[in-house]
Amino acid sequence: KTALLTGEEIIATERYFVDVMLQTGQEERAYIAVGSGSITDITRFVSFHTRSDFMAFPTAASVDGYTSAGAPSVIVGFKKTVMCHSPQAVFGDLAVLSAAPQVMTASGFGDMLGKYIALADWQLGHLLWNEPFDAEICRRVQIALQSCVDHAEAIGQASQDGLQALLDGLIESGFCMLDFNGSRPASGSEHQVSHHLEMKLIEQQRPAVLHGAKVGASTVIMAGLYDKLRQMSRAEALERLEEAELTPADVHRQAIRAAYPAIADKVMAEQSKFLAMTEADFDQLKHKIADHWTEIQAIAATVPTPDQVTTWLTQVGGATTLQSLGFSDAEVAEAVRNAHYLRDRFNVDKLGHIIGLSLVSVNHDFKI
Ligand SMILES: [Zn+2]
Image 1 (cartoon, rainbow, N blue to C red):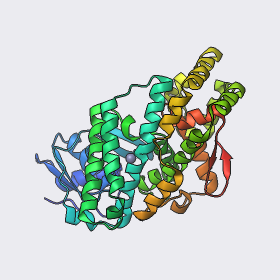
Image 2: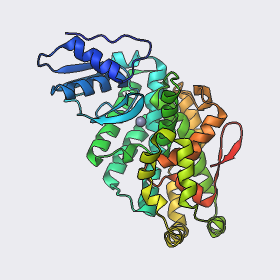
Image 3: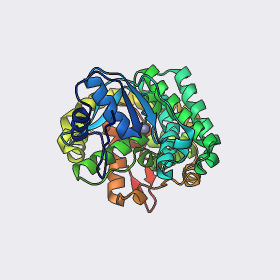
Image 4: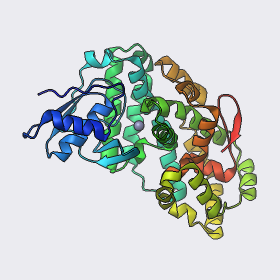
């Protein structure tokens, strides 16, 4: 039985969950998702909630979420990842994948490039905020990412070799998240900026923008932050740390309420450890940053320059700025300034706030 989904924009919402349930009826069955990310998430949701198995047959190498257990969904207007299950198997047909629209392929590549930031952020979080870290998983993501970058030209030409490298990389990244039992190995500040913008689009009922396209363009921005860290001498860092003052929790709460009025309580709960920071904790953190400056710079050195990221994105036909995806300068600035609140993680933007880094947007510098 085939359930065909129609509509201008197919996203994982209750509308499509019900649509598929009505089309497939109540008999016991296994599902096969034929499509890209949203179709797979709809199938993931429906199969899980009807106690059925499912397999994924991705038609585009557009995202690393095919193997994941969670289904990112929009429920009653709110973005939410519903825990469901992983597919029993994923089958990729290279001829189908290489015939996918290039924007979808570029999106998958952007999702992969984001791993440079995700891995660096993860290591920063481990070093400065005691976040759990797994060196073997980190290495696996690095290898998957390197293979995609090595195939950038082939991916840009949509050759089967290129698509194989890309889908393999995306699936390996998905496996790493499953093995780590969390998205930390594959998602850092670049994903948080993307999440922020996605929520705004949903809130304002604007058309969706491909996940990996937003992630790729956000990667350029975060690579800019790492570039600044890499260039900052220890002496300058110490000077900035000397001047750094703890931002009072109330100032953060106000910023959270202004940026995320509909989910402010949830965001504050997510930030509880940061909001509870005392002067003594802050002092300790500053010392940690100073003591580990060489290691911080070594982590920053693993991130390519924003120019290099831009070159790769251009090579595959991907967007290099969030502005070119339809976001205004003000929206980009707001996203970059606030997205660090969205997760309980110590990413490069948290560090940027402490040492007073400004970010280069395409048209102007702004303080984060
Ligand atoms: Zn992603």
